[in-house]
Image (tube, rainbow, N blue to C red; front, side):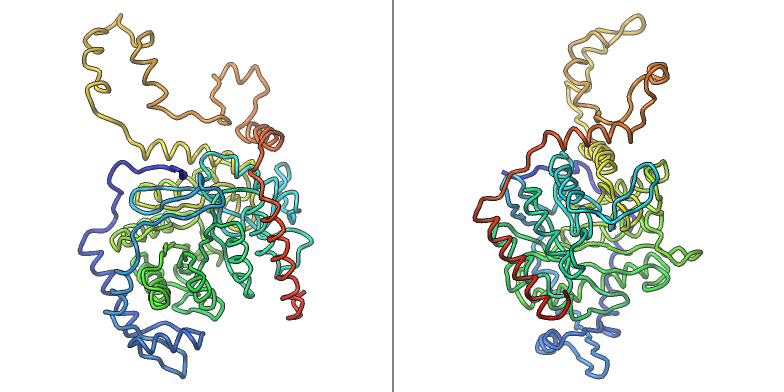
Length: 482
């Protein structure tokens, strides 16, 4: 058993020609060979040097021979299965499979005032219950649904959120790192017999700091999977052009891939484009705009060209409220990702960048994802769907199709209908309570919280999670971080 997700039943949309793909590839290899990456991790530098990389010990710069890079890319599997706590939630990523998950936020917002506040433990577990219920949330992301909750110390927030995800949902997830927390994240995943995908994040431009490299070593040694991603903004920590920032993003990712393949040949790796345009008027990231979408589409095409499972830039909006701007911004990123070949995409729940999140927005977004999934399904062209016999039978006016068996058989298959979008007629809406999609989503949220049951941990599993959290607390207290 496994989560089916969506299948893209037509060729992905391409924004690059074959020669353009080759030019980007050659430029990436040129950067890695002649510019190199700054690697702030002695063990990693030694490993690179042992395999033919040039290491400059003055500035910790590592330059990669093209043959090593290309061999490392070839070693990576093009698709693989990811084991969830509950086998029915396993995922197989790669090819034309498309899965969606939540886009988390640091704080929760009040849906009337739109003022943010720190989430509580109840906010976290309620949010996870809703994500566990939603049919188009196929996996959970790092820091989901929030980056932590009061009064958990900052250094314990990733371990506590990881534990919450394990308790609050049986879906597969990936996780972040920091202050050695991957030690405890990996242990918790092992305690419930699941695989966690750990992030290995480059620091743009062209740098890997010690924590990212240490996480890569621990992930490989534990036999887990990894996602490698850049973190640039075009015009500040990456070139302002889409082509140039694609080159630096790819170079950063390939450096991480080389390390992981040296550590464990054939290791399962997913790549993600986690870059954004810079708003030059304000200095902040411009999360969901056309440049970001085009960059993600180019990224998807390049990494499908390399035959990798791929994730595109998160569908974070710039809007501060659940409004029309949020809808078109998230739709732009999510739809361009789905059409251009993404395998994993973050979408549900985020309201403003990585800063705010709400479960009601996740419910609305889940319907948007359902519509995208129906679009990816496409449609059949055969004798039954062409309906020539029916067309001949009905003929011109006064003929009609409403009463025909063919219509009763096919109308649901050809459409998509959500539960919280307002689909009443205008006169009905005017005579009623004039509810918005946000009103309906809040009603659905209350219903889910009252009725949905999450698959619980066994008693042994819960004891293991508590023990690991206690060990993490002791570890950080010993370091003076608590």
